[in-house]
Length: 496
Ligand code: ADP
Image (cartoon, rainbow, N blue to C red):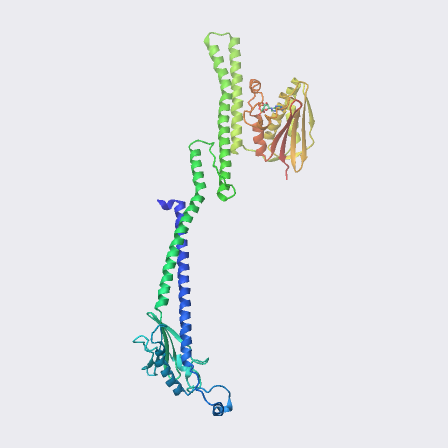
């Protein structure tokens, strides 16, 4: 179904809006042109009507005219109404005579008050219906003396226009009821209007075609990145996580969407890679103790052994099993911390007390390696789970002792700084190579893999510490100078 496509829907709406705008524009333009045309014709008709209404006064001797007027007012003498009507009848009858060729297309008709034609110009149409008299015009003349008020003057009734087929007419009633009409054949004007309408239709169709083509091009351009995004997402769904959306324009909405999706895909790829690495590492870690158990049991069962040999084999199996249990517990803790399912207490505690407890636990280990532990542990209140934070401190202290020189030093310090509490563990060991520092908190990451594994270490201690600290809303970081030692610092939010 094509209307399920965004491109087609855009095109449809675009076309619809364009048609509505074009039709509205065309109709308005045609109406305006038609109104102008009619206004021009009406004006012309009005002028002609006025010309007939205002005949030049018959020439009179100057003195006689002034003495005949009441009050001696200056100005031309108005004709008597019956004289004027007779004059009008004559004028209308003569009007056609001046235009026998009918080239200007104007004609006049004068009706008596009883509706009979008083005069008509010969170039008019054969039958011109007399206009209906409207009561308001009669009222406007009631009580007027004929000739006192000029029909075409400011006090007279307005001229009224009407259209009949191809003619336009204007008429005006006299005070006594006569009606004078001026008309015009609109043939040329109507032809011009038809030409205009045709041009408007042709131009509208052209604009519509161009608009639809432009709209299609624009919609295609706008949709292209979405097609690209969808194609990339399909390839990623197919399993190729290295795919990225190539978007040249990053400044528009789709460009920004492509950037966000690319970074999401990158994180997805990294997460999948980490997951795969994690599974491989976990299998690898489990394989060694399993191999030990298998070889020990096979060796013990191959022939009869002395009880000391059986004991030795069983002890080896126990160590391997112990190692697997440590690993399984560490993995479970990590999985729970990742899922936010590890229950954490939120109690006010003294970080220094937690640290001191851990120091006491690792002292025998330090003594074994003649390592001195220095404590700088003033009282530092903190909000969190004492057992979990103790696990972090234990891991850092154990590492600081493990990865240290004989007769080295480990320093543990707690302090309050900038609205947070900090616990740092510094050793005087060989330090961590710069290229390993960014990976040190990754799961199963070990700088010296073979040695570390041989010592039964899982490579999960720092990952678990990081997960615990982050679950407390804190952070853990390391600074290390190869050959001089490392400092691990845990920062936790201070209690409110
Ligand atoms: P492990 O259980 O192997 O100690 P960790 O996650 O605690 O796992 O540590 C990961 C690796 O980081 C260690 O194998 C070691 O190589 C390195 N490391 C940790 N702490 C220190 C330290 N204080 N000095 C030097 N290297 C360290």
